Length: 126
Image (cartoon, rainbow, N blue to C red; front, side):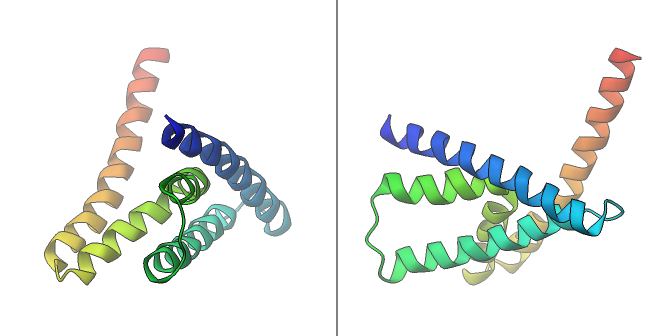
């Protein structure tokens, strides 16, 4: 239960941080291109790399703290960080075909899922 609470608390923090940062960047540069979301995804992925490597090499952190920071905060900040970690781990294991399938499939099917969701909502609500 402590693990679930850690993830939930981190997710709340990460989600609010994403909302604030993406909005702030969007306010500064304008809304013609989703630079705020892109920046959040890149920053979240970089932080995920630092944390995962730090935990692997030297940082002694409890499972709750690891889950709070990676799954919770960064998962709430951007699910792209988890996606990036999974893809890189596949490539590092030499699973290049699976890695490419995961990357291309995730992007293409997520976009397709959004389009399907839009059509369903339009059909039901229109």
